[in-house]
Length: 476
Image (cartoon, rainbow, N blue to C red; front, side, top):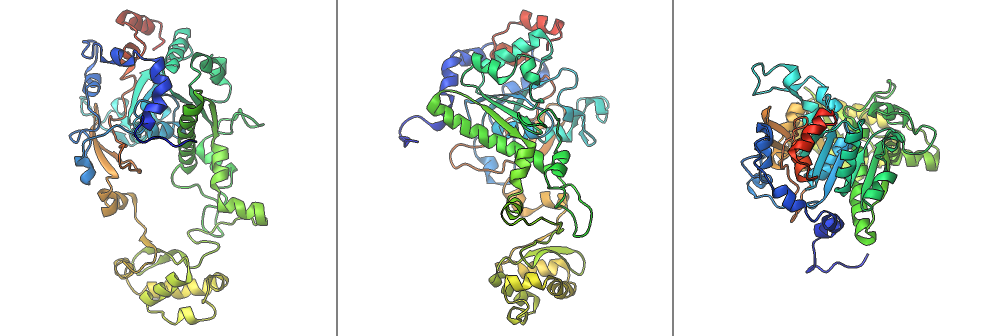
């Protein structure tokens, strides 16, 4: 790739160039009739909201005081036809980076996760704020910020046409239907790329677009089981267990998000979009990383090791007098430091424990010695003694302790936002920071269909009569 003249156009302007030329009238449409009387109260609260003003988004650190700047994906528009976790997580990442995300939902209930609870956030506007029918699920609220919700029945002729019209005005489309399903509806890559050659069409599925399992639906836990992760997770000698969070969904969302970013860069050179095929199975197989390499290169089958490591000792959770502590000594120097802190200075000179290879060979004896010593003092005693010694260690925090952690708060990883029905809610922050283009939480997760009228009017130029007709046809 040729060097970019720093005095020239910005990356985001280059990324959005094709899109902006194609929909040059967008700004004028978006600025028209902002205060239409048909807009409901919750819509009005959001339509005029500035990007991440400090009064709307509150964090624990200094960055909460800094005025928002356009994100790196400012000017990019994403059509989100996903539900549950992998797809919505991917599109939330894009939204956090500044993209405008239009989330298409079924008018009858919307994204599956809206009903996944408890827990639910109370509805502060309802006479009975604890009524589950009026609440938003914590699950949905956690992965759908920075999005607009548009309800569309894509099984109707009018609904399909509406999605086609939206796709024509977007840079990216993300979907997680079973392969072939959207093709049958006229909403596949082949059809939509004819309408919009610059469209980056991303398919997230359980098993991919090809192969004998292509038509199988897939949830995270099934792929954890089928792609080896569950087999290697759990205590030594115990039964397989799933990971405590849907890590396969999340890593797939990350892979898809990265693929979309690369496709946007490729479009700068070619002017054309492309189809991205991303699956949970492929993502989980690759995420086996060194476990996969050990088998493929050396034929070594992985085992369950609990919190310990097959090739490093000590590297596991160990008991203290009142709790547990995670300790990792990844080299001989760190092992020597650990022994000094524990008052076991003689161990590094013992031939049985001098090198990591020796320690792996004599794992059980060494762990017994360390455990006995650690159980003479409390967790807080050992945490204080290990601080600033140059050795990795950590307490075993629960979720409450995690979100009270001083470093988590200092990094603004807990932020407070105003939701139309739930009021002030706390959400996780954004884990990446840019020195110039800011990643921000601009709007809260949407109510079901909250932006339908706004998007149809501002993006597509539909008038009130046409929108009314679509409702009567049950297309929206």
